Image (cartoon, rainbow, N blue to C red; front, side, top):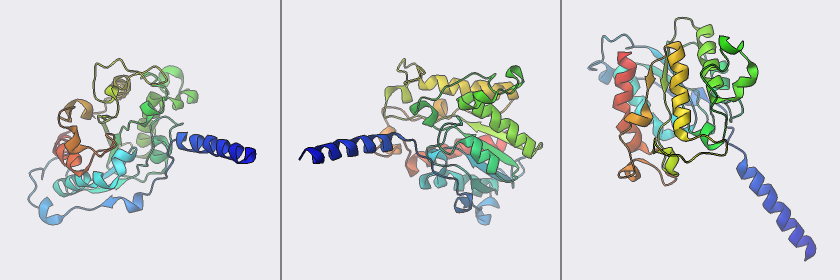
Length: 261
């Protein structure tokens, strides 16, 4: 009986450690490639805009790559006559320490006309350092130790993309709201994670990095139009991931942003 108790205790420890490990799924861009419906593209109101008919790459965590997200991205493809390849992976963040990081995704990406950096919630929920807009820039001599922060990761991705393709257009989509904790949807919340940062701190860090490089930002957190009164219609039961209806709600704003910047 004593050995059985010891085994049960050991198994509990192992399982606790296992579930504490962030998801580290790999990118699978060949499985996440969308093409436009030519009939829709032919009648699109965005014909003639600068970003019509381009190749688009998307990077991020599960919110950028799960099956439900295709509802939004297919709308981009159809209305912008665009081919879209998603390099995102579940559990990924901008921090080099967060899953199959967005830094790794950018490293492995091919050449595209437009690159969209879609921020996840994973740097916040896994307590990665926010950092500052100066992380991994000329201001700190491109200090590689700062690649562990969210801001260092964002700055790395911008630099790496422009090394791949100096003519590339880069867009940034901020993190979406989530409703499994108050900090995830209240911009005035003082509820901090284990690293001492609120979710709003991460979003402000995202904007600051992009401001430094003149990267256009779609502030999805502020413009999503989803709140505590209506989120159950647009989110899955985990209150973290959006369902298909949620993506269809934000897709028109995303299409308009891509077309007009």
